[in-house]
Image 1 (spheres, helix red, strand yellow):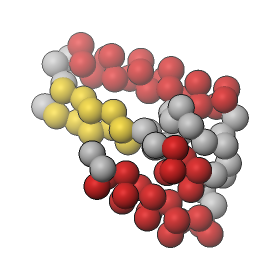
Image 2 (tube, helix red, strand yellow; image 1 turned 30 degrees about the horizontal axis):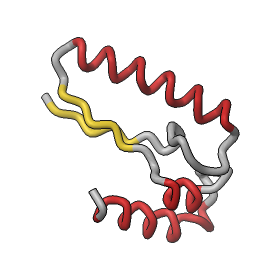
Image 3 (tube, one colour; image 1 turned 60 degrees about the vertical axis):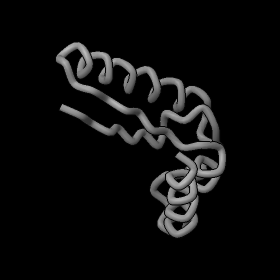
Length: 79
């Protein structure tokens, strides 16, 4: 099986508090390890600097949605 994991809060960049990012990354890596140990092929995608900045400190802020979509789209094009 193949899984693409999108983890918007596990980015190394952005305005989220570093402890939030670190905690999210740690949990994500544990989950990926469990999936991989079960034979699942996993690709992890986290926001690049531009996307993380667009997300801002409140990932649920609706007023940022258009900027987040645009930044995420551009990140996807660069892959």
